Amino acid sequence: MSSSTLNLLDLKQDKIRLLHLSWFAFFLTFVVWFSHAPMLASIKEAFDLTGQQVKALMILNVALTIPARVVVGMLVDRYGPRIIYSALLVSGGAMCIAFAFADSYETIALLRFLMGFIGAGFVIGIRLVGEWFPARQVGLAEGVYGGWGNFGSAAAAMTLPTLALMFGGDDGWRYAIASTGVMAMIYGVFFYSRARNTPKGSTYFKPKKSGGLVVTSKRDLVFYIAMCIPMYLALAVLTWKLSPSNLGMLNGVAAMALYGVLVVLFIVQVSQILRVNHDVLNNVEIPAMQKYPFKQVAILNVAYLVTFGSELAVVSMLPLFFMETFELTAVKAGMLASGFAFMNLVARPSGGYLSDRFGRRRSLSILICGLAVGYMLLSQITSTWPLLLAVLATMCCSFFVQAGEGAVFAIVPLVKRSMTGQIAGMTGAYGNVGAVIFLTVLSFVDASSFFMVIAACAAFVFVAVQFMEEPQGHIAEYNDDGSVALIEVS
Image (cartoon, rainbow, N blue to C red; front, side, top):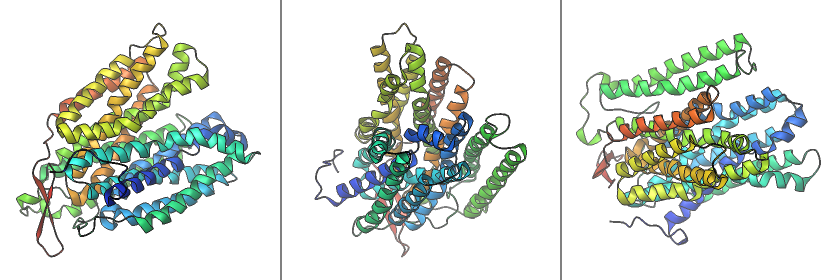
């Protein structure tokens, strides 16, 4: 049995080199994806934008990521991580450069919308890392990949303003943003030349059908379709935020047209799901070794909704919360709130390690419970609290949040190897769904109630996790010659 520890400095091992190649690819996708955020003040001035237009730009940046993660998951399972990651980095980098030198608000809005696709890069590495590491190490490896790669957004915030000053002039922000696109394109070519889909001699298992997850019972089929609905509802909420009744960036006709498009896309997706699950609909007997419970995927979805979804929401509101509660300057509040995101560097790997070492369901249960308690604690913060205590409470809460994310993706590669990309894509999309839900709640309630809502959702997820089956033994996949390959998952 393999050890649950990793020597990340042992670059003689192919899998360690692959891990470093992968997390840095993910890191760059987040640098590119969030390259505009620290430059918003300059962008607002350059295009003479209103506050509403800036808010619309931020919404557009994340809108496409929900369907993109699902689509990219399918592409990864079909064509392999090496070519998809390389293509995403090169195309995303090109769009980033185009955004940097755009000359109208309409153009930057369109490009920001399209660049939501690069936010799906995370999904690719989940399948890739899962191919290279055995079950007893995959949680820690996925945690390193996710935690270190996710730091790209913080790195962009810390470095790009300085880089813009170094370039100087009114267009310094353009060159700073463009430089991230150039880096992504160069690394995309480098990644293609160095990465491999699997270790030498291993088989890259592909789903027999593409267009959706293949489930193994009619009940799971209904469950799967039902789990697709929240993703479309989240997109509908984003459309509402841009509609005349909110930000007013869309007129009534355009908003109704988008609602119609979402309905059509949902119908198309359901038809694809029914097509790939034709055997289930026709009562064709599924071999026992090929069966897996879809509830595993559904539980991972809602667990990521409450972990990563809450992280995205809290990172967005925490600086303002600190500033208003403790009457701090914007700079100081931002620095104190940044601790929430910084925890990714150690928390995600820790969650993955705990999952490898002490069991998948047990670790996820403990971390979700800690997350619920953490948010209940944050809901009690008032101006009477010592500032240091408030920061420590935030850091402790963030550890459970991000360790929970690591624990979720310690399980994803162990459900069904040939469909890991699609499972990771759906789970990742649910993280964005969670962010939309929680930020929408925040627009109607105060910060204390906002934290309590997340805690209540976490309590529900804790109960759901108790129904999860601990990955044990082996999962089966078919080789091209029809023979059965067993993959250890415990």
